[in-house]
Structure formats: structure tokens, C-alpha cells
Length: 504
Ligand SMILES: *Cc1c(COP(=O)(O)O)cnc(C)c1O
Image 1 (cartoon, rainbow, N blue to C red):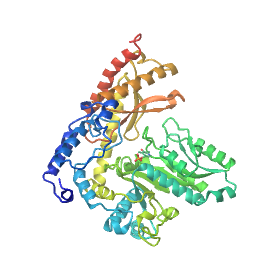
Image 2 (cartoon, rainbow, N blue to C red; image 1 turned 120 degrees about the vertical axis):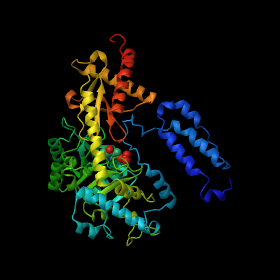
Image 3 (tube, rainbow, N blue to C red; image 1 turned 90 degrees about the vertical axis):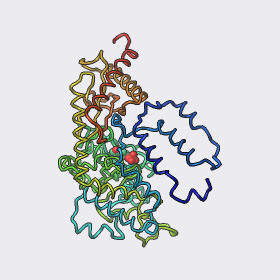
Image 4 (cartoon, rainbow, N blue to C red; image 1 turned 60 degrees about the vertical axis):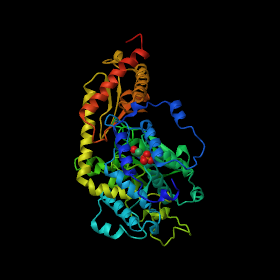
């Protein structure tokens, strides 16, 4: 193909080929090409730069060969990932977005799409904070105001929140802090806080000890008395607390911290209150489940992940700010691009050039809408309860945390320990059993749940291996859940024989 031809469209029947690749991909699962590191290494081991003479048809064949080896996250028997199956219109929309190639860092390189981004952020702000119409009329498109920023995901949103909190608490000059007698900064939250907070505090130069991970109660919610004790402790040690972090949907359990009480404590202490609702935020769409998030509307900042429960492609996160002027604490300019007097979102975003992913949100808001999201979310939460009931009714399983939203933690019990009281040494065996089981299930590729390691109050501080199921795919039916649990029971018998031959 001539180089020039690559830039003229359309290529003959490329659309049709790509559509059939997508369809073929969705009909596979990982069992077609099980993960094998040395095999995968061999398949992609050419370090020479291609000369660029490959025909498009040959390149399509290369893509086709890659597909079986990619993760088939949208399979209804895969219930361990936080990645949503995407509505079918997304493919065509992403083609449009890629070819528009807009850069909303700057108003002049995205024009009306910058305003669309602000409008989408305002819609989510209204969902989370529920301000009056007049508030949105005044601030949605105001120059020195931002109801939020788009990010590439929850991690960057959380890091941005810490950046903001630090600048609010002590400006960007840590020496000034030392002159006032402070010996350091810290953030306080539960031990189930996402690890992006460790990355953020590391970047702020505050080190690992600045992330104070506090105990949780039997429902995996931050323990308020531990929070009060730690606040007093920080005061004594002359450590300035820059933020309290509430999690609305922990990554492990989907549990929600006591947000109203945390908001009150943050107000009393004059400390920034951030809520990490990367997973749980969209619960606000459901009138039935919205009360779970009570207190979130009192946060200073809230993280949302579009690529989780909002069902848009990866790379779509947001940080929302209750007060439109808050973002001024991190305002930065560059003489060649982002001028102080400009309307550019790049004044506030940690990222520079970035895609205009707000278009995916805009499409989802119009095509799925408030009621569509409410229904999908309620059905997912119902499916999580169904799965929890199936688990509780079967002695081969132990439910480790009743689902609050659509995440559930459980484990498989090997036959010789079923129905027995479980002590620390039994738990060590069960841990090994669940690790082997989850790996075997993943390797076979027919169904999938993920794995985590956490203490659960019922067994004290002992770290336990837990299986973690995510009910996010609207295509999951009761028979998929039953098939997944049956496969685990079947694999469990085989693995018990291997691990505990004398007992089974
Ligand atoms: C997923 C998640 C994050 C991180 O989001 P990424 O999009 O993976 O960067 C942060 N916090 C919570 C609670 C999450 O579930």
C-alpha cells in the first residue's frame, strides 16, 4: 500500500472486517488460548521495526491471531473484573472520537467539546451533590470555576484530590509547613483504601507512613473511634492531616465508610474530605440504593470511574469538586499553551493532552439515562444477592461479606473441612486451597473470579485468601452463576486430592 493511501478513507470493507473481528472475539473465551507465559513470549518476540510494506489484509490477519490470547472480559462467566461490557454503539462512537482527535486540554483544540465536557461534569456533579439549578447556571461554564476534571481513571482522580488537599492545607511550600512547627503531613482512611493513595502521597514527597490505614469494623467500614484516636495522635506528633478519605465502595468488598460521621469530623477539624466513589458512585442513580451513599454530598471532592459502573470505555475517570473555586488551588499555566486568563481545562488537570472521553459519557447519559442506569445497577445488586444466597446454601462455600452493592467475597472450603469449626491452621489450608483453585479456574479459562487477601473480623487478624465476584455484566444469568460455582466445586475436588491426599 502507498503511504498516501493510508490517509484516505475509506479502506475497502475495513469496517466489515473489524465488525467480524469484534463478533468473533465476543464468541470466544480464554480457554481457546490458555495463558502460558513462554508461549505468549514466543508469539511476540520480534524486536525489528517493520518496513511498513504490510498489506492491510495481512495486518487484519495479524489482529485475528491476537484475539484468542486477549482477555475475554465481557464473557458472562467472567465475574471477577471491574471492567464493564460496553454497549454495542461504543465501537462506532469510538471510531468517530478517534478520527475527530480532539484535545480538551485546551479550548482551541477542542472548542465545543470543552463545553460538552463541562456539561457532562455538571450532570454528574448534580447527581452527586444535588445543587440548585441556579448553581449550575452560574458555575457550569464560569471561567475561574470547575465542577470537576476529567482524568484517565480513578487513580489520577485520587492523586489530583491529594494534590488539591495538600495545596489547600499548606500551599505548595512544605518548608513553610516546617517553619510552623509541623513535622509532616498525613491522610487518614480505612485500611481498605485503594493503593492509588499511596502513589499520590509518595508523589507529594510524604512517604509511605503518611498514609494512615485504620481498622475497619465487621462490616468493613472505617472504625470511627480509631479515626478519633489517630487524629489525636497526629496532633501530638505535629503531623498535619491534609485529608480524610472515605471509600464509597471498597475494591475488595464494596463496603461504604460512615460518610456522614466522617464529613462531620472533617468539618470540625477543618480538613479536606475526599470520597473515593470510583466503584460505588453510580449507585446514586438508583432511588432504592442511593441512601447507601448518604454523606457523599458533603465531600469536598469525589472520585468517579466512568469505565466501571458507568459502562464507558477504559480511560474515563473524574474528580468532582463540591465548591467550584476549589480547583484554583492547583491552577498551573504554560505560556505557549495554557494561559492564565484562558478557559482551558488544562489549567487544572494533572494530565496534559488527553482524549475527549466526555463524549462517551454524553452518549451514555442520552442513550442509557438515569432510569437505564438505575435498572442496570439494581439488577446487578440483585444478582449479587442471588449469588450470595447460592453460596450460603452450600457447605462447599463460605460467604465472607454479605454484598452491600455488587461485589461479594467468599471462599471455597475443601471437603474435609466442610461443616467443621475453622481455626487458624484450617485457614492456612483453606488459603492454599483457594489460591490453587482460582489459578486453575483462570488457567482453564471457562469462568473467572478474582482473588484478594484480607483479614475478616470473624477470624481476627489472620490474612485470608478470598475469592471476589463482581456482578457488573447485564448478560449474567442465574445459570452462569450456577455454572461458575459448579466448576469451582468440581475443580475443588481435584485440587483437594492434590493438596491433601491423606484427607480426601
Ligand atoms: C478502581 C478503583 C480505583 C482506581 O481506579 P483506576 O481507574 O483503576 O485508576 C480507585 N479506588 C477505588 C475504590 C476503585 O475501585
